[in-house]
Length: 309
Image (cartoon, rainbow, N blue to C red; front, side):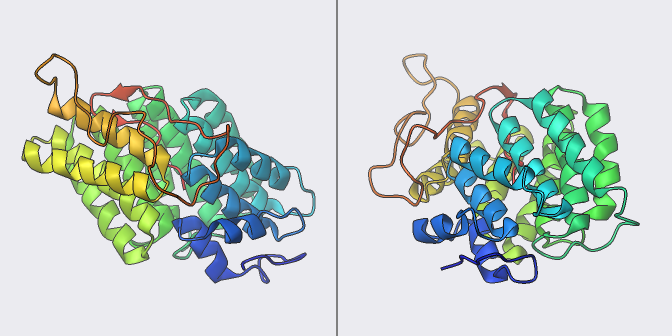
């Protein structure tokens, strides 16, 4: 169990937080971390796990609890605010997300000092600055404001740490998407390759899967072997479904359909049983009415909202 009673950052289980952030935590561990008397860092990480399986309403309740907890401290509240913004953005709420990312940045930037290494998993103040700036870049990109997104990424870069850090991987996703929207698929593919290498070094299955999605999209736009890209997107969709990571499942199907083009009857042929396919076996995510699907709109082949966490 990863539950910690009345803890702070120094008492929250780092191994438990990692399991929650990577998607490796069991239902029981997520429920234990989500308890209202748990450390705020664990409640935030439990919300990341809930959002990763598409349970955005359950995640929002946890995140709002941390954001409004006066005992939680500035840094956990900022992380919770950035994560809430990420989930809104994944559902298409770019302007609402920008307001929250801005609020998180105002919480942590005044006492942040100069950029420093946020650590591999990105749990401190520097990581909150990195995530807020990267989130603001993604918010701008969602409004197709490439110039603002690029400027914000330049600000975020020094805060993200070296390759293999969670914040650097997330930065790489948004950098790749920005390059795609700007019409530079070669730069997008380079950024996606860096993100995937970083995710592999980090050792997070969820971050690796997201990086594989971004990399496949960039490869498709860059004109790489179409059959290979389609196979890569099929594999991402299948793996996302198998692990209950539904916010990655549908974007992979949409990108695959956009790349593969119409089938014999004139309709697109997404893999995996169609865009509304559901798991045929058990998965970690809690069943319920609060499971949502990311905004299906795309810019070319770019699935929006894959930058969370």
